[in-house]
Length: 319
Image (cartoon, rainbow, N blue to C red; front, side, top):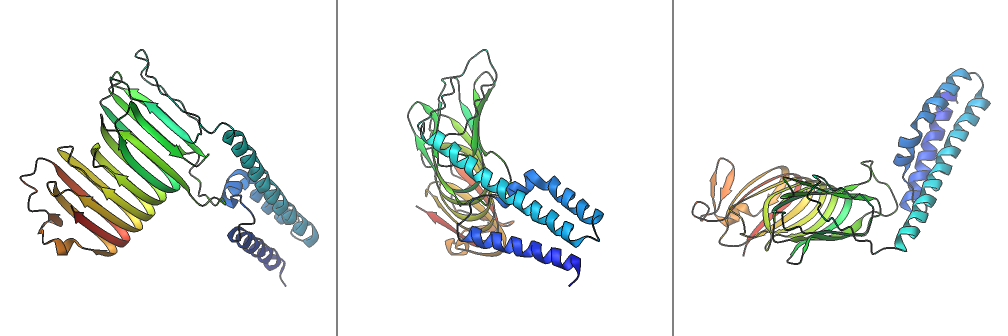
């Protein structure tokens, strides 16, 4: 057997064993996170293999040492996360209250917590919510209390912050994964629930890997919704509380169900490779790729919905 084939085969065996143990949930650390942290070791191991090209035993020991370090570091990260979760679970009801100071243009408080609460300031008229998450069960609803946002998220690997502009008239809330690395951790998803104030005008953007979502805008004033996700199911309930609502959804493999009130003027454009929809069954006028409801021109409240999906189902209900 050639020496290079021996080493290459050993690497494949290691990767196969790791993936098998991961699928069996026997290990819970991310190989990609380890790789991002320890990638210089690959150069060291490869360089040592070149230097000792004629010494098979040394080359083998180098790669064995490399894999031992990778495995040890992975379990160290797992232990570290475990200790962090224990520490944070002992103080699980942390609330983040963002009291705006008029002398400051920005009030940013970034922590990882399960409960996220930002109080509503009297000056705030508009708000934006930016979500950058991995795999999540997402619930969004409205509330009429004194909070701008009140939320719950299971993941301990999330940062959240709030910033104000225009003398406090506009707030921007960001809820983001701590890193953008592909997550192969044992916890294959988490739940989140956010209630938003019905007293401000919202722009909402979501960049999510995999999502199972129920989003209820019937009592919210939402100006724009922009969702970009890889896969999942979305149930979206729209209201008629703004003059013009823009919905833009870009998804891979997905099922999308949207419900609209009958007095909302609606137009829909659907693009995708392999898709199924009920738009033709609605008997709406079709113009320049848009399906347009009969009451669109005369409606006080209108919604423009653009959906671009790879593979999936789209259904629109008028209620």
